[in-house]
Image (cartoon, rainbow, N blue to C red):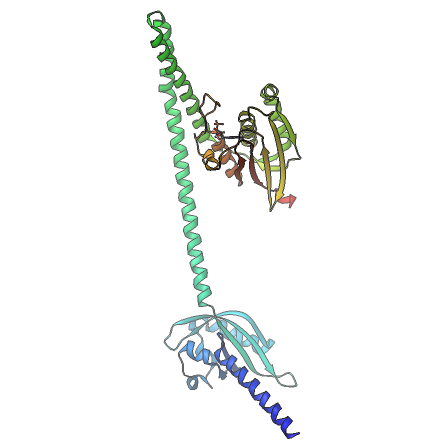
Length: 381
Ligand code: ADP
């Protein structure tokens, strides 16, 4: 019997020692406070963090450990401990012996006698200075990021303005060159030999092409300036687009497979342009030995509609798949495939102002799939 009691006593002592070790070395500061506000006990962590000696704390008022900035809130927390027997997540500040602050999160549980009267508190202060520092750093970083976005937006506006002014102003001398070339050809045609006529034709062709580019640049810089957003049915847009492109569709024998498309919030003119560029590219860059087939489908993914336009055309080599979205970047000579190289830059800008994305998946020689993602309507979710 006695050996059993001894074994139990040893177990109890071991358990008390373990508890004591955990209590003293916990990363949190523990303090027990009597109902008159005097400190009954505290752990080693509190001693180390506060810089006080234990004997300087025990028996003193708990409020000596609070920073004057949060004294009032500490008194309120103590009142709620007395009245409700607990405090949950109170944000307060302690004052170290050297006067500096420790931001803490206070949680209190009351220890009661058998009749339910409060004897003292078990209070825990969690040092949240690291978390607060990280939060402040994060806030600072977010502020920097927001400033950078503002600067980028301003730079973008500036560039758009620049593109607008230059493309607008370039039109006049270009019109003069084209007009004078025509006049020159008319007036001197009988005096020009074959070589001179050929050069003149080149000048005329180059100026027409330059005019196309200048007009495209002007349109690009103007894109989205007077933007109104409405509810747009993509099925309608695609249907109208196929009517508009009926001549080229018939002459190229292109077939279509069109799934159900979503309604989105957007600008009708811009979304029309988006589909027009993608569908006409899918026809234009067709494979010489295959009948063009275009599949248009949509899928809802994480709050965004992914609309895919898939063709079985010439495809795009992996190295070029990013570059094609850059303005005026083309992979072919104008004599092979006509165009200005602005279509996909347009598409990218349109999709971005609609808070979406555009990207391509392609295999050279087999076809390309252009994907656009556009936000799902809020009331669809
Ligand atoms: P453009 O059609 O006037 O050349 P875009 O900006 O629309 O200009 O396209 C840029 C380039 O991307 C094209 O010159 C072409 O090389 C490539 N491209 C675009 N769409 C396709 C497609 N569906 N299949 C293969 N290549 C494509």
